[in-house]
Length: 100
Image (tube, rainbow, N blue to C red):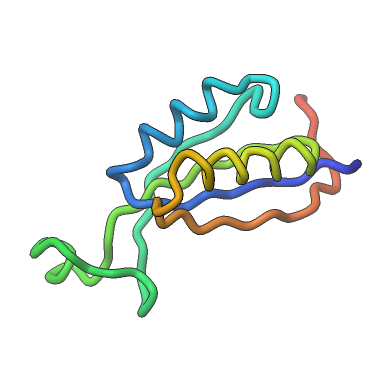
């Protein structure tokens, strides 16, 4: 099965829990990258006063590459452990992934 890129976007307040879940399963996620982002648009609820003023909400992005079956298992794990987490995700095929 080919490798895919799994991108997870979530509110900052749940990011540490998602990271802990990923770290607990090195068989599914041998590594990942975390970065900060800003959520914009009608599907991003602005709750805090600072979010309302700024017009965006802070988000955390986690990316990991690997076999599609493993990444789908990661999604199932998050859904099972955090059913109301409000994590948006996508999977895309990887043409090539190597260290240089």
